[in-house]
Image (cartoon, rainbow, N blue to C red; front, side):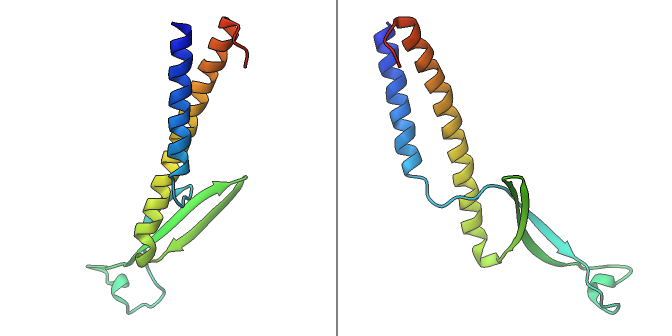
Length: 116
């Protein structure tokens, strides 16, 4: 049973490694939609009855190594930005799963005397 479980865990880790190699460009963070009001007092965004804000503008925000970063994303870059965010989420999920499997594998090897 132990040998079979060791093999299963190693196969799952190998599959995660292959999946990680297939991940394309990625970026951490979140994407938000912004609408703004300008300073022109006669603009449509200042209409007292039916204000129409400017936008939408898309903003990508993330924190990396303790530094917060925000940048605007052009409409034509929106699809790529969403894909990169999705890739990053997939990357994080795969790495977390790998860690869980590696811990289990290590514990099983220690108990069975198979070594690390």
